[in-house]
Image (tube, rainbow, N blue to C red; front, side):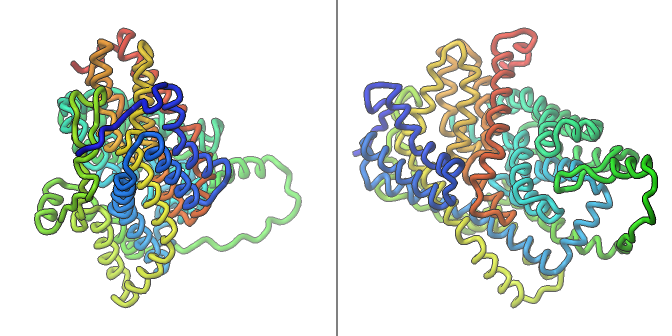
Length: 563
């Protein structure tokens, strides 16, 4: 006998919505404002979710426990598995000293912190988002930025802000393809519609990223490079999404953006210089010292570092090049299918699988909810990262014994972040199966004429709750379609808006924050990271909502809507 979800358990939409928001308020409030440690905040949020699900929504306690267990397992595989192995690779390069060589080689392209952000956080991160997604880009770019000298807070927060515009096409188009398959959208139409929304933000986000780092004055000095980075990403993003499909959008756009920025910097450099610590330095200081009278002999300076040999540079970049190849190959559907054919057992959660029934208006008819955990260890992105780390470690000269010891040290280092990720995913999964998050979604759906704006924020809410644009599309894609048809809007427009709005929620979802803090050694201060990015997330999501509203009602934007 199944248990049917109820979306207004108190018979009062306002009160039901307030109670549905309680788990999220407890977790985020404890994290950001009460300054609790992340595991405690996640545990408190999970406890609140259990009380609301069982005590208010009437979910059987056994079902609630099974839902939380499924979420915890999902948190460890694939998310925690990615974090563990990318930090393992980072630890190897730091122990070997090759990471220092890598830093100097990047400084050879540009020593300016602003341009390093464009190159690594935005463009290089977009490549990893397109190839793997699911936390990989934030883990990689945050680790690289902390090694280049960025503060832990800046490396974490700026990596999260940068990882927005590419998310809808992440993991070889998985969010778009899943939305189409699950809710009956046309995949190519969705791809094209998202490709007519996000390119605006692919140009805007690099500017936004730099303003967050160094303010308007610092950004203005590098606006040509910022424009090159954004346009070189946005144009391929539009063309590939509209004329080829969603699978390779981010990969192609990221390669174009990195290539164009690197070539541009060969003949253009900014008039001033900003350090990775966010301080204006060289250019202004040189100008000031040239204009000022000499007060005495110049102080002695440290001798310049010897130029890097090509062999050193190749060796330092080798592990990261190997990582890129492995991650891309592991992201290919043919690879995943082949590996899953070897080993990918599925486990239906007892007492939960197909016993929770989703009800209209979220779905057209009563639909049992599957609850299956796939132990796809071979095809998981984290496994590709682990193999890349082992191969890269051997290239760097580590023995097998040294690799094992380094892995054990890394596992001990990330034990608390892994616990936090498991608890946060348990919270998100419980709210999904209990119908708590759907109550929040329905509150957005009752906004009438303003639905294009609030429907976009519904996608944002979905990613903030679940940590995944794919999961948000599964959760709210059907609701978007039903609401759009009832209001006379394009279902394709609102399905795309769910994904496009969702990307801006990526920077405040709990698992992404924990991943970023773990990669930068900032564990225990996740609340600071959340406060750093929260305004940016709300503001950018609102701008996406305004664009979708224009596309829904205002010519000539309405001509952009895909039928």
